[in-house]
Image (cartoon, rainbow, N blue to C red):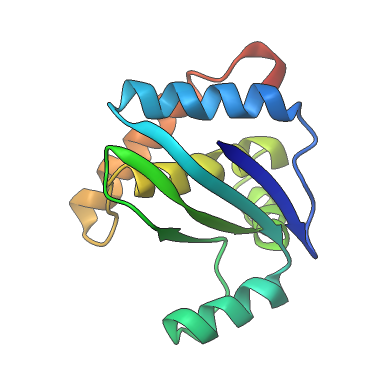
Length: 141
C-alpha cells in the first residue's frame, strides 16, 4: 500500500491513483513487491529537523528515505521537502512536477536497493530515474 501524507508540505497535484500505479509498475519491473510505503511531503524546516534527529546531518536535502525491509519487499518512509524540490526545479530549469516525480522515484529506487554513494552508483541511479520517468502515464506528464 502506498500512502501520501502532508507535514507542512504540499501533496502532488496529479491524481494520486495514477502516481500509485506508476510507482507500483516501477517496483514490479525492478522485481519487487510493494509492502507499506509512506510518502511524507514536508517543508525544508521539517526535513532539516528529521535530518538532524535521525541522521545527525545539519544540511538541507530534498529527500530522506527510511527502509524498513529488504528488497524485494519495498517498505519504508520517504520524506520529501517540497520547498527543496521547488528550488531544485528552478535551479535545473525543470518543471516542478518533473522534479517532484524524479525525487519520488529516487526514494523508491533506494527502497529497491539502489545506492548512490559512489560516482558509479550515482550514475546508475540517474539512469534508473530516467528509465522510471519514461514509464509515467500520460496524465502525469
